[in-house]
Amino acid sequence: MVNPQPTFLTIKNHISYHLDQMIQEVETMKKSIGEREYCLLCELGQIRERFDEVQSSASYFYLQAYISSYTSSYLELAKAIQNMSKQRHGALIAIEREDKVEPKLQGGVTINADLSNRLIESIFYPGNPLHDGAVYVKGEHILSAGNILPLTSKAFPKEKVGTRHRAAIGLSEMSDALILVVSEETGKMSFALDGTLYPIVSSESKG
Image (cartoon, rainbow, N blue to C red; front, side, top):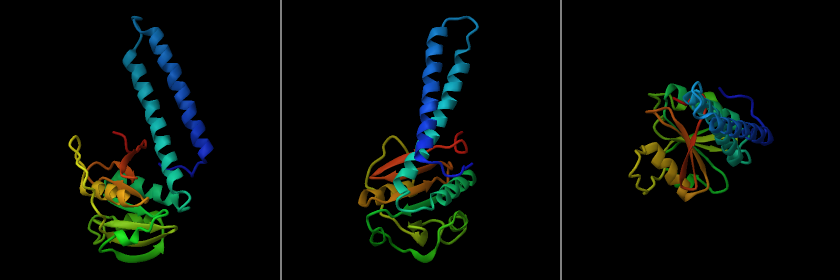
């Protein structure tokens, strides 16, 4: 579930609070190990839940930090990728920042529409003719859809990286664009920036 857009200070405070709680819980664990009735697995489970909360907050904090100066429609994008993640609808969204993205795209269809989560979700709905390509976002508008992005030439020997993820990394290697990805197979969300893929973790996407 996407909450109203928080401020950077609110998220930082949220992360700091949960880190402090984790430190206290770890200290308690160290002191209690060896006690007959102490449930180590229970404590480890609680710490994992708190870590997931911290990771979720951090991923959205950094995502917002990277694109808030380039589009005020962050909440629409967040809603779209979370909804598509829950339904396991694959998606690829390129958000232009300083570098011009259009010269690096191929085969797109002009849209020129106001950015909204409903429009993005309809574009990537399975069976839509444009759902296999990338949506190109500039400011508050979706300029085109069905775009083909350049694929990275990087090798990934330890993990399987699909075409959408390779395309996201590829464009991020050639520009400062931020590219959002939703995996059709797992529903997992991520974003590519500067040639690196980062997971976006939320309570809806864990499991």
